[in-house]
Length: 231
Image (cartoon, rainbow, N blue to C red):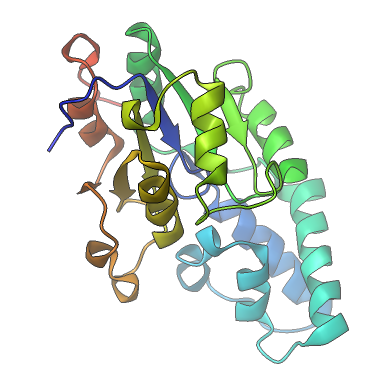
């Protein structure tokens, strides 16, 4: 149910919540596998692991890699992604742009809290032309701790000039909900993101789960609830 506390800020996880980055992450992983002469993993196998970050994707593609070899593959994957695939097919999820406009039109603000490192987050946010709209962008290395620790969430609230109780955080991973709850924000699970049945999102303790960005609208002040079904 929507909060009785007036919301001032909506914060989003990046990969799998605000933006559909899986096609580009998959393309970079396939390029790495081809370089290494191993069969490429299908998109369906990779998609629901994207929110777990580059290391998880490399482990998925190269399960036997360890130590220095694993680290070499991980860095090569990230460099391929940054240099060639960062924002080729990445898009906001359907309905998200109009939701962002609804937030902005109401005089509320929004931002991003991601575990993606800043050297990947910042150019991606700029490429999507969101850098002047987001009131805060917190990356995985912005603070000494990253999600599920509440520190990134608390900094985002500070930069957004809101109290955690005035903030809604939307994410598609358990650590997102853990971080939001620890910081004192309201939390929503984005089921449209990179979640499969094995992740048991219903057990994460979020305030609610949503299947589409339009379902965030009831959490906003009434004046901002514009229809986005056509988006």
